[in-house]
Length: 382
Length: 223
Image 1: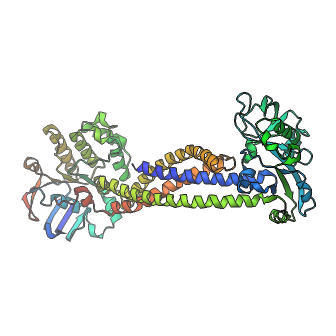
Image 2: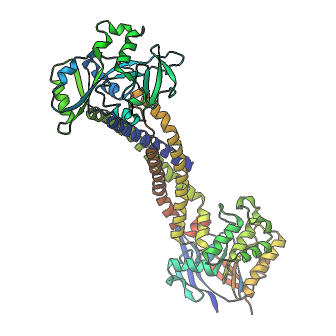
Image 3: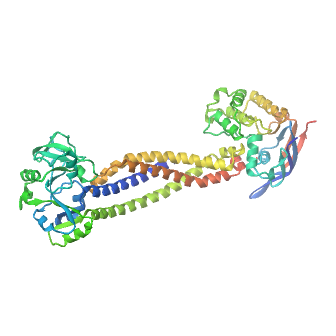
């Protein structure tokens, strides 16, 4: 019972702390590893900007590629590259198996995938080659069907914790050709052929101009686009997550209070059950401080055991909750970090010990201070 | 040498009305004495033992143990005294439930600052508990638990043994063995104060007292 109360409290604590800490660090990591300080999207994407930037959900939004000319010359832009988004299809055999984003990158201007190419001494992807994110289900060196074409998997990117982990990259010409030829996507090209379109412009700012200032300049140009500083997108999302976190923590604090009261009751009952043992200990020469320490130690062991069980259960359950959150809130790919796991588990254990100590202090003091006659004879005069 | 000297000891409890289990009690126990205290149930015999052991504060009067005034001893000193020089057989066979028989005895020995596993083995053998050292209290019969409690009280060679109904739960053969162990204490220069309902056992004691309405009267004394 005591172990159970402690385990439940720590389980919920570890689950909440672990999930939210990992969500926060995944957000940070996504922003850091995206490689761009700003992203320019068609303005119709506005409602789903975060999802478009940080997840690998299929996103078929387009703008005319000549928009880039309007951005050239804006102060503070150090590098700029375009990407063309389309999507994979579940083609039952030899495909990636799920619908996910397929990104065509521009080999001429790219600075997002450039670090990978530099370390492999490869300049770009051939027309039948693809590069996959760390969590795309495909064999490195094998061939996979993408929008009806057989593509060779030539590389796998390092895990980044961002939407890139579930994204497949081909060069922009290939992506446009595949999109144009796919009968399933044909209705998207009624107004303009894919060759005239891009999905995003990724910008790296120089050190003198803040990304938010450049975004403001772009947004004032009266173009059918919207620029987002990736840092702002993250902080907006973080605020939303923090609001949910505060609510959940509030509920958890109420649970903590109930658990503390339950443990005080439990430890008091345990001490009462062992009244005679305590009297015996006093009678055979155990000092009051010894009895106090003994009861505190026992409570600590019980609470600690609960904490350990709760911590393990929390750590094991957290991935399930995180996957559910990832799907339902369209969060970036969540990275299960060992450091976060260890910190949360240790915090949970500490919480259990503090809870056990706090809840047992008063009952232990009462028991140690009780008169031996009362404890041994239950108050009877004999 | 006086082991225990009780002068004008009174103990009052107020539970709604005031109860006086001990009223102006006086007696002295010397080294080598074996005293029995008789009296009806609930009259205050256990209260007398707890007060002598320093577990209860007297309302009035003075108790000297080993020629030291208990009132002048700190709680810590009284605790030390109990651990080192006093053996206590409780009316109920109370043991630490989480510890085995041997661990219960080891724990008691450790409190007195000693370490003598041979003594534990000897006592287990003396009280027929040889094969029960690793048993937990709940695995023992009531009689076996009682014998462990007696072994624990004798473990540290107490100078004063306070025995509250030591024959409880024991058959006649074990009562004889226990009485012999108690006599050994007094024969070796210690002292025993035994509370009992059993007048046959009380008859084996050198001094015999009767407690009635708070007054202790001596009914037999050693010449």
